[in-house]
Length: 89
Image (cartoon, rainbow, N blue to C red; front, side):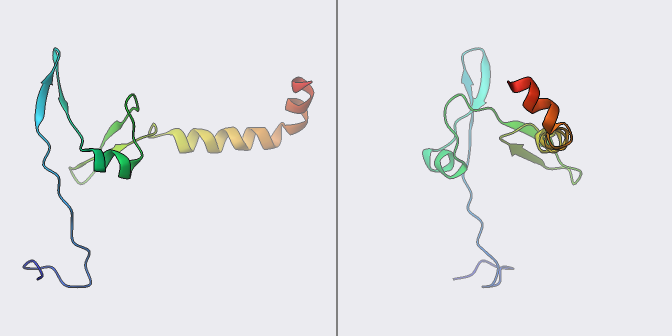
């Protein structure tokens, strides 16, 4: 049975209710095992909370500018390949 306003071609959203809990002197969220497995997260992993222009939020596993920094590093490694090879000796 479809939800009102949801056509059969649209994917159904899955919702998990998370409760803010006291953890030591801080507050935190406990993520269900299924969510951790799906996101490939483990204890000790860091998530970055990014505010979206639309007013929402998004969690990312890597730093927001990581891809940009890696692209710059790859360009530098390509340009200075010979120098880096000499330094590696």
